[in-house]
Length: 248
Image (tube, rainbow, N blue to C red; front, side, top):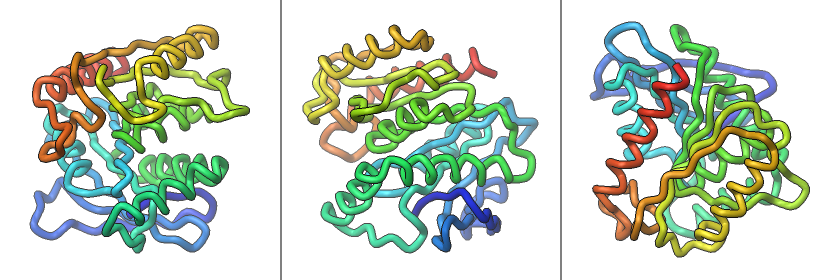
């Protein structure tokens, strides 16, 4: 599954077996079809929460997050950065898709911006939006922040924290929240990397905050994974809701 920009084509289709307020939507970028997921609250929405998936693509984890946002009164929209027809069966597939985007930062940004544009084009979606992401999606969220995507805020859940050569946060126009585990062993996601990120944001004058969950490892929000940490996940979700309440 995945994202867009020029020549936007948009289609919406109800997702079989789900509530009428949850549906998939498709959009096209450079001839590639991407498929996202939107969950709407019962009443008037308070704002929009965009979600970028982990390296294994848009799946049940992101759908559950979108529906949780709808339950809190927001429109929850899971974006797709890999494409509807991407083969995502094993680790080498995940590495192929993420590696291609990390190697092409302009293309990476175009897919993020395209997903935001497609979400904005959906009927009844508030234009006040916060971008969130998990693992790879957290890195993508920080990429969007550095690109100066016009949003109300950026929230990274256990994402890659490093800033690529030639990039900085001078174009970032909204607050950044980082939710991270202190025991994250992934290169580029350790406590020294977090400290460096905080220093960059401070130097750039970007409002920022980090919530650190002691002992939590990399994918602490992914239930069923070896890194699942219910307490850290609950704390991160509470921090997100607090952040959203301050934005909308």
